[in-house]
Length: 553
View 1 (tube, rainbow, N blue to C red):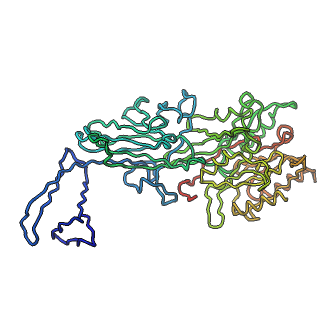
View 2 (view 1 turned 30 degrees about the vertical axis):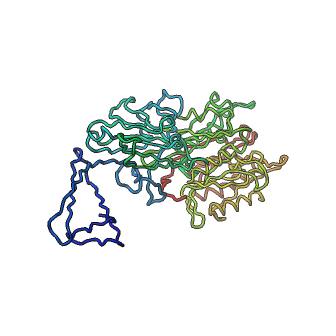
View 3 (view 1 turned 120 degrees about the vertical axis):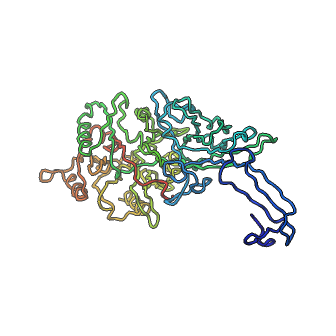
């Protein structure tokens, strides 16, 4: 019973309710009806101070259980009644369902990414989707003149796909009912059917024009009215899982390097040295053959490994840079079952050198003041503020910023000829947590919360060529990090007491931290071409154990 306390006093015990225009009766049922009008509510009318009823009214009701449910509790399973389905909240106490962008390729028969297919090509593809359950319990006769309709807005229809499961185990038992070409779906409920299963996939990552939230609704519609009237609507919200980078401090899984041939010969010895390093680090070595790289050795510049994660599933995703040189087709060759792909294209004038992903890095988890970044912060090389120099393309910067979980920081790298952050910056795992360099040092302190004790200065000389600086000897900062094993460019420094003094200096700085330094000759195949070991390698790493939805951006 609902009432206006300013006008009507709520009776106690078995006292009668006063008959008033300000009294409303609200009735709810616990279970769905078996037949039409099988619930009765009797209302009796009494004269004041009399026990005999003047008359009675009987209200016949039909109980219908309609509910659209998803994994709002983030446990990997759909469970009814887990918080507010219409909103999404960050944090360890947050709630709201999560979608993966279905950007892998589970079927070898498919040519593109799974989300480009409006038909299911593999049952394994369902594991990349988020389950959704529609409860539709009620008398079958009710649905003779009522129907259930799934709806998605025009904008969200471009960002998700929904497949309806009809109980079988063949691909034809799963039909796409919502997506870019379908904004509504009249649910095909069978007699006696109480629950219908759906699978929802993401089609696009968050970006400058998309905050990452999408919603779906189901409505019970009376078909005997004109226009048809929705009697009840239930809505659920999903957030698209972001693309997440992994820093050097995460354990390595696979080391990628290219086989190339130069006028002086092949890089076979370099590949042997990298194989030995990978073996020490218990890391799988993958060599990209000459036929696949077209003698383009800069595999770090071509792509960046990351991952996506939902409570029920996680898989790696390679971000293909806009540079598009000899390696331009290789990232798509990595695409396969549970290995996704994403890219952003630079319009008009094309990509600059700063759009290569040697100019893209990510810090380990940091805390700046009271603000925690449990997944680290993305680092991008850029020009000096207000200098009008080179910058990474806006379409790439917007994409990285829109992921929200690794707030980007721009560093000054335009003083270098190549202009990449990996020429002067690297993170190594430890048990302990000059003008141009000094500028970046202060930015790192301010934006990552670092102190002088967190920074190790590696000896390196640069010389001026025109308006930009180049490494005078192999740049030892441009190393590959495989756990505690470091593959460092051999500097060929002065020999003192039979040892390279530069190597000895670096060992004295890093090996007390529990790291193992291996100096590798990259002089002809990499250094002379303005790159080093980090530029010529790429590493797939383990995802963070921390769940991104537990943070608050």
